[in-house]
Image (cartoon, rainbow, N blue to C red):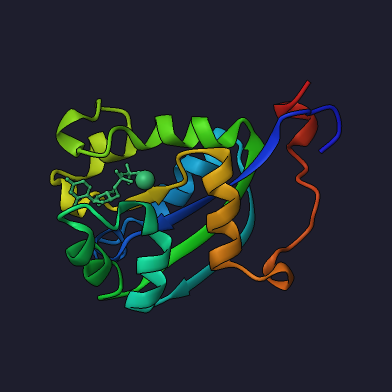
Length: 155
Ligand code: UDP
Ligand code: MG
């Protein structure tokens, strides 16, 4: 986008618990209202192997097996969103990994209780965002369009 140096993309997924609880709309609403721009989305049930790849950095953690099983147990809503400094801003919107440590006003602080059912994933660094976007989406799955909000969101 014009005039915006640090435009970034991040990978966000509503996890199976968030989908089952009917929270896709609430999560999308928050991202839209912040001013972020949706560039790709799909609703799918991921395989356990795909989730093992996605969470590869956590392979030595005791919860890795259960996490990957859970993440592949039902549908997820996978998305790529774009915006200035979006990786960091979305992590702030999510709250902490443990909903019990997440402030009210954050997605996890408002909408969930338990660390193993924290409803949403968001990339933690720009480097991981690039990896995750590439793992979940093919180039032809991105839609290029101009948001009419652009001049009102960015100086
Ligand atoms: N997780 C868990 N138990 C833990 C830590 C993490 O079940 O003690 C799950 C939780 O769903 C979390 C995911 O593993 O969202 C990935 O962990 P990470 O540390 O990357 O947290 P996130 O980036 O999602 O905040
Ligand atoms: Mg993480």
